[in-house]
Each structure stands twice: as C-alpha cells, then as structure tokens.
Amino acid sequence: MSFSDSLNPLDGFQHKHPSDVLEACEIIKQSAANLDAIVPSGSGSKMNIGYAPSRKGVVLGTKNLNKVIDYPARDMTVTVQAGILIKDLKELLGKENQRLPIDDPYPANSSLGGLLATNTSGPRRFGWGTLRDYVIGISILNDEGVETKAGGRVVKNVAGYDFCKLHTGALGTLGVISQVTLKVRPNPEASAFLLLTLNLANVESVLDRIHNTKTRPVAVELLNKTALQHPLFKHLAVTSDYGIFIGFEHSTEAVKWQTETLANELADVPNSKLEIINTPSDSALWQALGEFQAARISGCPLTFKANIPSSKVATFAAFALDTIPGVLLQAHAGSGIVFGHIPEGISRQVAFNSIDMLLQKAVRYQGNLVLPYCLPEWKADFPVWGQTRPDVKVMRKVKESLDPKALFNPGRFVDRI
Image (cartoon, rainbow, N blue to C red; front, side, top):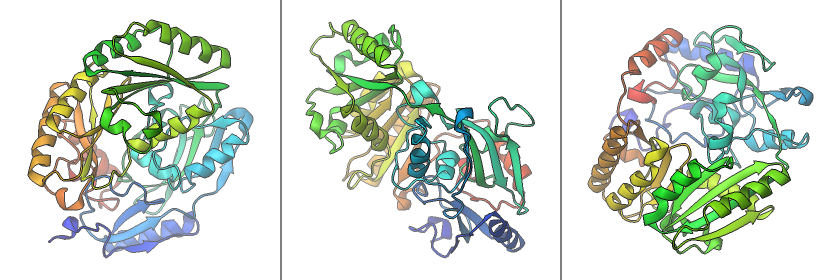
C-alpha cells in the first residue's frame, strides 16, 4: 500500500503548531529545504476533503494564529488571523450586531482558514453569496516562507491581482492562509421560514414558481423524506415525499410580507401543506440545514455534491432517488447544488456504478459532481473531484508558478494537483 492509499492520510506526518507567523515561516523554510509536504490545518474539520497527500511531511497547524488584528465595526470590516474559530468570529461580530452570512456546517470547531480554503457555503448562499464575495484582503505564507499580501482593509480596494479569490477554494495548495480581511453585514431584523411539504410530482413546478416569485428568499432548500427523518429534522414530523424550506431575512415588515405573499402564491399546490416558522424556532432550523450537508450519517460510506443548473434540481433529485434507493438528499435548490448521503450497506461496486451514473447525468446538465466525503479505502478508484475540466491546465500552471516545489497539499486537489 502506498502512502497516498493509507487509511489515515496523515500517518507519518509531523504535527507542528507555530505560536506566530514568524515561526510558521521558519517551518515552511525548513520543509522546503527538505522537500517535505506541507499540509495546512486549522481545526482539521475538513481534512476528509480531497485525496490523501502524495508524500509525507508536516501538518502545519494554525490554531494559535487566531488573533483579532482590527475590527472597525463602523466600517463593516474585520481583520483576523486565519486560525480563528468561526464560533469565536461570530461571537465577536455579534457584539456589534453584525455577522458574516456564511453557513458553516461545522460550527463548533471550524476555522476561518479552513472555511476559506474550501469555499464552504450553505443555505444562505442563494441570497447572500459565498465567502469569495466577502474577502477583501488576504495574507499568504508562500513557498519561500515569506508572508505576502493582497487586497486591503477597505471595501473599495481594487489594487493588484485578485489573489483573494484565487486562494478561496484552492484547498491550501497555493500557500498557507495566515490573515484575512472580511466585509461583514448587519444582523437582519427578522427571519422566518416557509415550509412547504409536497409530493414528488409537484416539486419541479413548485420550484419554478419559487424562482419566479415576487418575494426575495435568501434560501431555498429541498429535502427528501429520508433526509427529513434525520434527527436534525424529526421534530417537524414531515411524512410527504419532500419538504421545501424557503428562508427570508430582512426587516420585520419585509419578512412578514414576503412569507404571507409566497404562502398565497403557493396555496393552490395539490396535496401540500404550508407552515410559517418564525423566530426563535427558525434559528435552530437555519443551523440544522447548514449542518446537514456535512452530517456524518451513521455508516454512510460517501457523500456526493452535484453542481447543476437550478432548473435541473428536481429532475436530478428524482434520478438520484431512482439510482440510489434510500439516499438522503438536500439541495440548495436556488443555487443548483445537490448533496446526497449514500446509506449504509451499499457495496463498493454498486456505489461506484451509482456515482458514475450521477456524475454522467450532472455532466450532461453542464455541471459536475464531487465527493466531499468518501471512505479512505475507496478514494483511489472513485471520482473524488468529478470529471476533469479543460481549465485544469490553467490550474496546473498557477500551481507551478506559485508553488514550483509542490510543497502545499501535493496531490490532494483536482486531478491530483
């Protein structure tokens, strides 16, 4: 068995937790001299994503790089080190009635650097965008052990190349994120969900109506019956084929008008039931919907994530149900993202064939399908990053330019970059 096939991909790695940026830079310099791999890690909550590193080296932990550098709340920006935990960042912003409107599926132990490296998003993506939309400044420790910076601490900063977006979602393959400046938003005055439970036959037409609504939801979540039986949602006691959660966050008056208006627009859906879920009950629901996409279902061997046109979500979900009976589905229906947790007991070959069918369906829809979670012993054969796209050549050139020694997370990313 090769190192990259190990069931624990970090076996044999040294784990180092520098106390400051200077110490982190020294670790990188030493690793570069020995051509050791460098695996950046915050809390480790997202280490299951991607392939195992292709060679041994150092896990460079950033948990001590967690300081608040600057928080001019009036300017609606905050500058922090990348090791700060999301829960601590939320607490900091909450004191000023502000927030970063990005859903974190690992709220208790996720770092900002990990969230940024994976460009993780959740239900609010539809209305508030992704982390790429909020990063206005970034500092990176490069392959020479030097801290480089891009962007700045003001919102209207357009100087230089947009390295902020380049490093967002790069899985730490281009350097170690050390510091981030974010623009933030005020907390909404009110929020609520409209829950529509309905049968499979009406899902596509209802989603079309929601896309054309007079209202402005910030989340449109579609869950199938099996997903709704998960402990996170069992209190809702949904027995229909599907549940659609339409979330609103605005002023109190706007939320009231929008939930009532959409309820009227959907009142004639056959065999359906409407329910408005207001504060404080909706707070737990926001959290549950954010967590479920990354939930470690008992015995679940893998989780897929399909990116497709939003108009194809209903048909793709139906195809997934036919392909994998018992799959737990959650779709960010407004954004065209479908997550599926494959149930316990499926064989490796059946799982492989099923994922291949779903991948081909997603590609026919001009999309793709990746595996955010997969049993380590299956990864060598499964399409962890989906179908390779033509732009992988550009990605390789960027990697070679910024990390010519292939120090950072070698072999973990798309096409084993």
